[in-house]
Image (cartoon, rainbow, N blue to C red):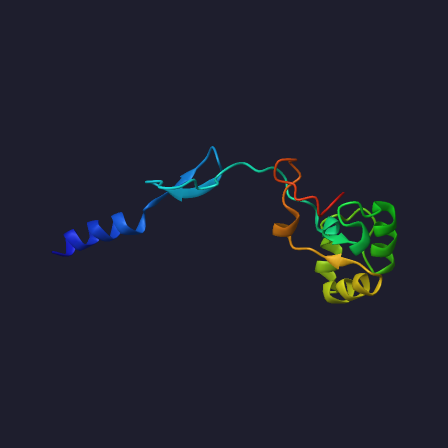
Amino acid sequence: MKIILLIISVFLISGCLYSFEGECVRPIIQVVSSNCYKKGEVFSSIAHYQKPYSIGKTDQQQRWKDAVSCGSKYGDQELYYINKTGKYEEFQSCMERKGYKRFWPAECGYKNSKWDKGICNE
């Protein structure tokens, strides 16, 4: 009886497979599309900061000047320095005071033009 329960449990738990082609987990039996595609590279962390009047077209040079004045290091696109020093909240507040809005990665999409939502720019 225990063996039968174990076998049933394995089938119920492992109803998904990892797709190396699409780099995601999807169900064994697909009823609808799983949206399992290689979508491309994500935008860097600094690209998530956009001016409200120029979303998707924010001046990159000015954004870097503002980021450096808020405590970041020039060229640190992923904001590792800010995270490492524990000053991310200060940095975020400073960028907001300078008029930037921070978007989440899901709001930006991917660099690949098919999945780019036109919100972030690098």
